[in-house]
Length: 391
Image (cartoon, rainbow, N blue to C red):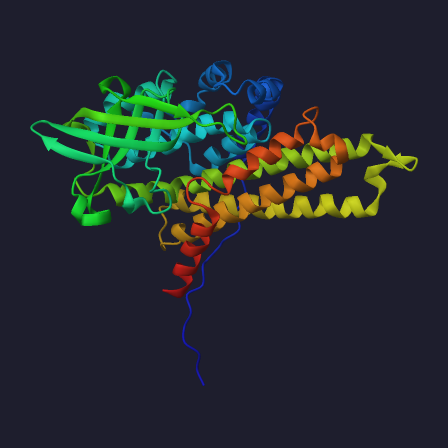
């Protein structure tokens, strides 16, 4: 009796090139020397750290994902993931500065007109401008098609009205990639995408008080009949939902990289502490039960790292077999669940000290949580994975 054919995801192993390894070493030195010393202060102040941003710009990290035609370096996505991971290993807020750079520019790079690319991308690549991605609303997070923001054509302009919520870099960015409905009756097919400058009339509403990622502002972006030139439409009318999903497929692997970095930072801190802290006359690193905990943390993190690299390599390959939607969801889901589990165990390994702000593991634990939520909750990722398996 023959069995029906079943499509199997072709997940190939990946090894870093010598150039990527060298970049990782450079990023690690930069992160440890420039970013790590400010990490606790960034968390405590709850403010965007301009010194960190300027240092990243000086390292040309702001242009890593932007094609060289527009002043960037056009680095591959695995290299971009290495950047995010190494920054998150010491400061998740700083990694998000660079992560949101990729999220906001991906629709521009892949869908905007040549005029829009030439006008906006060079300044972002140079670190002179920053962008935000405005998709979510209070009642339209996971259900993007339920958004209520509207864009009405008025001659050579569109008039945008509505409120976007949970927007990273709200108030810091000067350009906003905004999704709004040009045809409310058409559901997802009625969503369009716009590039909106803050000085066109955008207002910033309340900033959220959050569990973690304190150094990255998150807030409301309010559109009170903001007039946007029709030439600032990204793609065509009705393509917004497709652009949004296309973008998230290509940026979720960066969230996976952030989660891996957070987990690795917690492992680094825990392993150092275990060698110094003594109980019963010897370092706790010599207690087998705790060794097993650390080993499990490392195994899960390395598995997450490899899946993250694989997802990013699919982007670089052009996703020839249509695997990215599923593999990217796997990477984001698995890596963020791993980061949450690893950081909780890291706090446990520190004992009572881990519950205090004298050590970084409580910050890692707080920062890890959001990776299970933003750019699609892990419940949504599981739905995506299952849907691909069952189609």
